[in-house]
Length: 502
Ligand SMILES: *[C@@H]1O[C@H](CO)[C@@H](O)[C@H](O)[C@H]1NC(C)=O
Ligand SMILES: *[C@@H]1O[C@H](CO)[C@@H](O)[C@H](O)[C@H]1NC(C)=O
Ligand SMILES: *[C@@H]1O[C@H](CO)[C@@H](O)[C@H](O)[C@H]1NC(C)=O
Ligand SMILES: *[C@@H]1O[C@H](CO)[C@@H](O)[C@H](O)[C@H]1NC(C)=O
Ligand SMILES: [Mn+2]
Image 1 (cartoon, protein in one colour):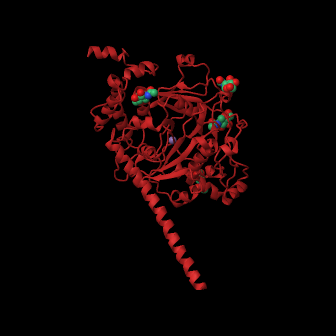
Image 2: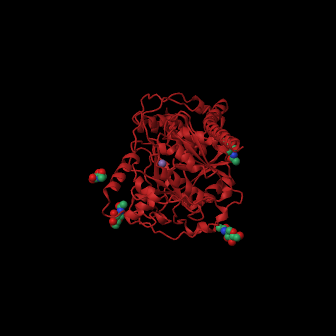
Image 3: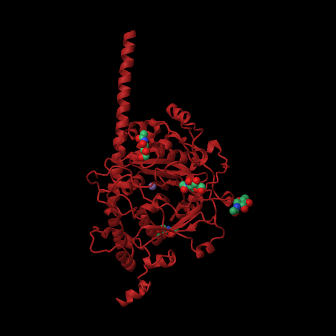
């Protein structure tokens, strides 16, 4: 009898284990299959954003919208760390405190650190560091181009200061804000950085606004991002993981995220960003009022050496405008006077000609209506300008939101080389200018010495622009970006005149 029972439970165990294994396997496979399927589906509709999968490129580290640090943060700003005075009502937030591992606490002790990184403060190491730790630090710079060792010592859910201007606390946001899918793409990024990005969202997003956090793994190769990551996020049902079976680059990986996300609102953010208290409501409010609106926060900076949250809280100077130059690389600019005049107070959403690549919010329906990104774009680059032009020219609006702050890790350098020596970005901007710039394309051609570079076929993209009845680039320049600077050797900046002449 006894033996029978034992046999029975062994059998049950084997069956159960097998079943669970099968289940996990199917989910993993199907989440990949699913992303492929849905993209194929989309292909038969509108603009065929077919995700071109090529041979595995030889580069081997994470994508970045390698970003020029905002000018306002290039200066040596002293942070005025204030007390976090947002009241977090626990039941409104989903929040499980991640534990500090014993080995980490051990390093705290050895380095004399008490709650490192608390309130966004820099982690300052003692002048004398034990050799084994020096080695770890050197290694983390080598691999990640940041001090990943220090990052790993900071609690994943660290407190950050509430740096919203006072006015933001009095704003009444729509009570009909859309539920969001937060999409983060990663490729071989440090665990602590990905998870700190995730927990910042968890901790500071009201439960009813956060549908899911969708991690899109662009074919990472590092072990800690395989089963250990799955085990870790298993505790949090709202965190989902989609893995791309081959390396597709940031742009395509985001599209995989979009087609797998529930929405209705999508937040795209890099997996090396920390959001601050009150970040989401002001970003969603314009979308609740106009489903064709897209928003970006004020971008602060995470210091790659000390993981300090660096910001400028002077309301006169803390925000820059985003534009671009004629080589189609984005550029930070001063906020023009007419835009300041249009606003009733300095904390209102501000119209911005272009968006940052690292972080934006858009309704899924509108993003798909705009054909997402040009699916022929490689890796990263130009996609933020493309989407900015599409939003403005095809019936939408783009705002920077002073009441929403998030910090992006600006690394000193790319920790990888491009498979084609950087030519991808140029190919992307070539396509961008061909589809969207109209007669202004001559400025781009001059700025980049264009001589019959091959940028592939853009018929589909032009068709999309036609079908959506998008406005002209002239309209965009005149109404949204009149402060564009023209090349110094251009005598007559009016393209209209030149067009008549030719
Ligand atoms: C900022 O300025 C302080 C004091 O002038 C200086 O000690 C510090 O090294 C500077 N930091 C940076 C990042 O330049
Ligand atoms: C770490 O790198 C620094 C600077 O390159 C070097 O001086 C130091 O000897 C290295 N330490 C170890 C333990 O590798
Ligand atoms: C928000 O609503 C409150 C209460 O109705 C009101 O007193 C306050 O003035 C409103 N704030 C703004 C900025 O309109
Ligand atoms: C949103 O954009 C789409 C696509 O250009 C357009 O058809 C629609 O009219 C716009 N809706 C609003 C509310 O502006
Ligand atoms: Mn980035």
